[in-house]
Image: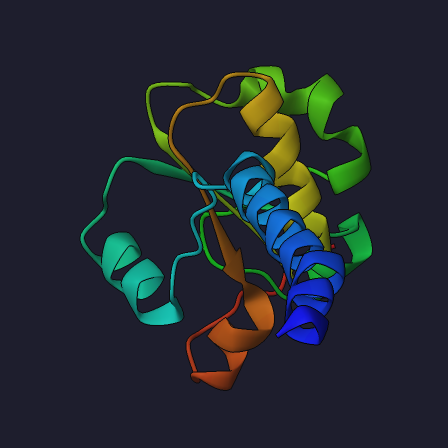
Length: 137
């Protein structure tokens, strides 16, 4: 019994305390407002002409090669400087090829107090067979 008490006091209690501290910190670290829109929902929103602004966060060349119809192009790196063109009263859906650039843009819009921001992935859009537009040069 004494060995169990020592083991419990030296190992189990500190681990339990650590687990409690970590679990208490997780809500503060979580991004509860992060919203990803599925390809199908995005397609429905566009088909229903919902009041939203669709933003492609990729480079100009990538945008010209293929983008979702109706999207505007704002590179993720210049999002803070160009975000003034985005209306705060509409929902904003930011997308890029795989999610990295659109997530960075999403985070910048959160910091700029945009209330309705969502993220989508262009690769998923293409994989679903939905149409893309090529810009005329």
